Length: 291
Image (cartoon, rainbow, N blue to C red; front, side, top):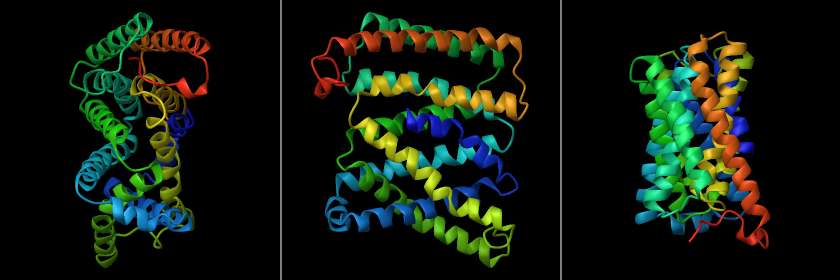
């Protein structure tokens, strides 16, 4: 829940960097995240373990995760700064459905009747919202598919949360750094050449990026993907409210039925989950996939 609340309010941060191209913000996000995470690894004495584990299948898996993450980040930053926050919220409303589907198909997670009802209601809401838009919401599709697949890879990843994120950002770090050096050479870099507040915000992109990602990475290894999928409705709800109430993006009455269906689905899932957890004998069983 902490990860999704932080992601939900993240549009406010990217809006503060709106004059800067999305590709430049992404490069800073990668480089500063890499520095921040590598520092944590060194402090915790896990550098040797990371070097040992970062090879073979693990390296290929995390390279794929890094690619998915970079596409997701770039699309999201660009969409937020081109007044498409409502469309990004649609993408993250679709995303839990993708996570649920991947959990059932690849991880053999099972759903109870109430959970299937919640998924069906949410799917109906998403279909309605897509129909109301009148065109393929490509931003929403890209965000949902890339993050859903990223969550699946993290669920099956061999490394711990911190080591895994460090490896992902490390694989992206060199290309991102080279891009920033190129921008510095041709005089189009914003870092150190804009207001001090802009430079500070670019520097802190590492912190605002890694904190929710660490929370998310830990969660994916402790609770099933179905639960994660439906909890993700928190983030797009926050994003929707920010887009409409803070930045004045259009949201007419025809969209309300779709969002009401999605929120009702989340309520059904929460009630079913609370009832199921009350019947479990202890904390060690919480969040395990049903067999």
